[in-house]
Structures are given as structure tokens and as C-alpha cells.
Image (cartoon, rainbow, N blue to C red; front, side, top):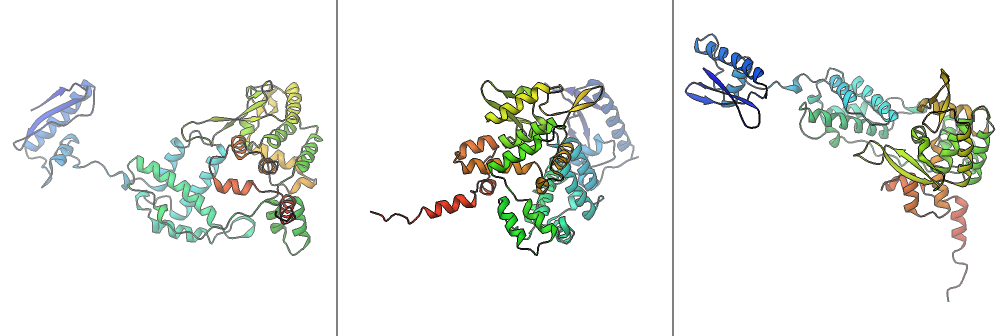
Length: 417
């Protein structure tokens, strides 16, 4: 009634006649035993049709007839995945398989974004039904909710949430749950404000002394502070005075003299330090879309070399550069992102440095001081790991007010000859 045969590519096919027509579909298996099992199902289906116990759907196409026979008379087309894929299930699949290699802080941020999407759009909403209109309404709701420091949420935050949704959509498209580009592309958001400029310590103190600023408004200014070279050295010395935290002294110096990110110092290994050639390799995860981890090299400042050499002499062990004394069986523990942030706040607590938001102030201060010293852009890019983002470069590579004033005063002093 039906015969099977194996083709050169290894796949088994079946041949049968129905209604005077010949059908030779693939059984989509290279296993002879599985092919014979499918053959038995197909022969039984053909017999049921022959005896009238089941009938073919009316006006069935050639492809629909094949689907009907291969499925044992149960369906004429492949199941519609989008009819069962709701937003919650797609998000769960995304985090289960599509975030490998990302920074833990990035994944945590994406989870916050998807939590809001699930909350306002609905966990059971079919992913295929999410349209630009759905997301436009979402944006309108989110921008009315509370953000940081009592203010309504910014359009910048919604924009970040939409970036995460676009990645989830991309996975759903690859799996056949949806078709076409992400609907985020046609959503209209309010114009974004340019991020506030970085300011010197003196500038911020002057602004605050004018008065009429709440604590929240004052802190917003301090969030944009950058330190000059003298202040950086003063802060590093302050951390050194915390003798009960030698690992923090090494960690702070690491960032202050290289501009490394918090996650990069956590990832750093002792083997990355080459004092003989005066360079340290920075393990980064934002440098390539093809590789999970890439490296950039930063030259080691003499002050940093002395600090790290002393640290490695008392290093408690293990492969990582910055570790905590071991709490379990005297084994050292690698510093985590949360531990790094918590310990930063402990170090600055009760001091003039308590206004500093976190580790990043040292990174952008390093970049600004490089620009002030006239370090070529190509070298700053190499040290910082910047890759063509002009907005980032513009925000980091400013000069101090006194420098700009000195340049201005040089103009119009000499009469042209």
C-alpha cells in the first residue's frame, strides 16, 4: 500500500497513491526503524480513508493532503506557533537561552524591563498580537509612572525597555512565533533630553550654595561630578586609610589609573598583569558582537604598579585580581557586582566623598583627565574601550572650566602682523 526508500542524503521517503495521484513526501528521519513506524501509521490512515471511516478535507491542496496523511488524519497544516506563544513563555525562553555571555548587570536590567512589559501588556498576551499600537499605549502608561527621586519616568528608560523587547522579538521571530520587524520601530516617544554635563566639584558646590535645591536635586548634580587629578589622588589616599580593606584600595586604584569598568575589575585575573612590559589586559564584554570576551591593553601607571605589587604580596590566593578573604574554609571569594557597590558606599560613608554615586565616577574622571592632558583620541579610545560612539566621547572628553578660560584668554592678545 505504501513503500519506503532511503535517498542518498540519508533521509527516508514514503511513496503512496491516493485518488489516482502519486505522493512521495519525506519522512524527515534517517532512522529506518522510525521510518517503518511512520509507514505503519500512514498505511493505517490510507486504509481508514479507503473504508470511509475518515475523509479528506474538501478542496485540500497537495501539501494539505500530505500533512493530513503524515499526521494520521489529524491536521492539514503545521500548528500555528503564534497561537500558543504568549509573552511570558517567550520571555522565559529568551532568558533561558539567549542571554549567555552577557554581563550579569545587563541581564538584571533586562529582567527589570521585561517585568514591566509583562505587568502592563499582560503575561498571557500572545506575542504575535503585540503591535506598535500596543507598545504606544505601553509607553504612555510608563511615562506617567514614578521614576527615581519622585519624578515621572523618563522616555530614556522606556527606550531601554524597548531595546530589550526588540531582542525578545528577534528570538520569537527566529522561532517562528512572529514575522516581520519589531513593532518598537514605529513607536513615537517624547524627545529625549541630553544627559546633563559633567561638572567639577567646585562648580557643583557653587550651584548648591545658591540655595533652593532639594536633597534630590543636589544629588542629581553630584551624580555628574568628575574629579581632577589631585582629587583622584586624594580619594585613593582616603581609601588607603581604610586599612581593614586592602582589596578595596587595590580595586579603587585599578579603576582610578586605568578607567576600567566595575565589572572589568571583578573579571580581572592575576595573569592579566604584565609588570615587565608595563601593561594590564582588561577583559571586556562590550567590545565585540562575535566574541564573548575580548581584551584591551592599558599601560600601567607607576603609582598603580606600586599599589598592585604590594597587593599581590598579600593576595589571599585564587586566580582573580580582586578577591575577598574567604568566608568558607579560608578560600578567597571573587568580588561580585553587588558587593563591589556596597563596599564602595562603605568606604565613602561619613566622609566628604559620600556624594560620589559609585565606581563610574573614577572611569569618567580618568577619561576627562586624559583629554585635559592632551592624550590623543586614539589612545583614549584604546584605553577606555570606546568604539565610535560620538555621544559618549562628547560627554567624557570635556575640559575643565579653568582650561577653557585659559584658552579663551590667549585669543586677541597679539596684533596680527
